Image 1 (cartoon, rainbow, N blue to C red):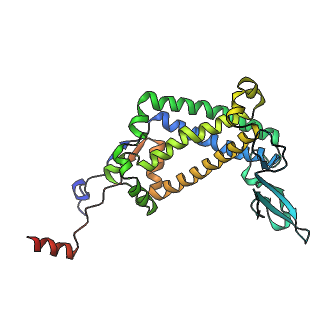
Image 2: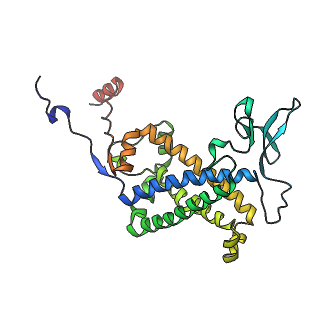
Image 3: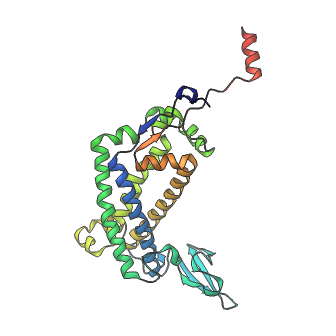
Length: 294
């Protein structure tokens, strides 16, 4: 068989350098830190599975609580209370595990680190990951500003704001940018990354510091800013939940938009632009109308 020349196959994909080495290392180290922080945080939460609001909270009216109650048959049922609402969450929250050997825990053992009931070590894992995560975030934010990456890659342009509605519709229909449009982040990606990097994660760090008596003694203004230690704990939990939702959506979009290409860009920095779709051919009616106009 004759050899196939490159011209016969058509031009290859355009490969660009999408992520610097600093960004790639930061991404993977922080992913590990986030997993440890989330799992060890759930371990800490299980020691007192309730959230409160306000400086004067007396722990008698939690905004959220996860526990277990016996039903009329004497079986343990998981119960989650949110304000005045009560939900049966048996098998997921409050009571989990096989029916024959269910365990009373706010969050199931598989979701916590480092062990089923090891609070002291869970706190140590949480603090260790946190003291790696926080300085790395600060360094990355400084890098974004100092290198100009913030302005060039993350700040939306006026033309992008005008297409915000269309971009939302395209994402809802799982239509992702192709060709040159895929070279840059779209406005939804930019707004999401700005929200996570400059709002949610800083709030996680600051509310975490507010729960530390040592930091409260050094920076007592933290208690005033967040309305007390219990309010800070609630905000800390909500921001962590927002990060979980972000990670789930992020992973889903990576899988849907090309897992190999996206993973390669975050490992090697190289990203192959998806080829642009050919222009749509005019319909028979459009061709007829064009002929009639002539």
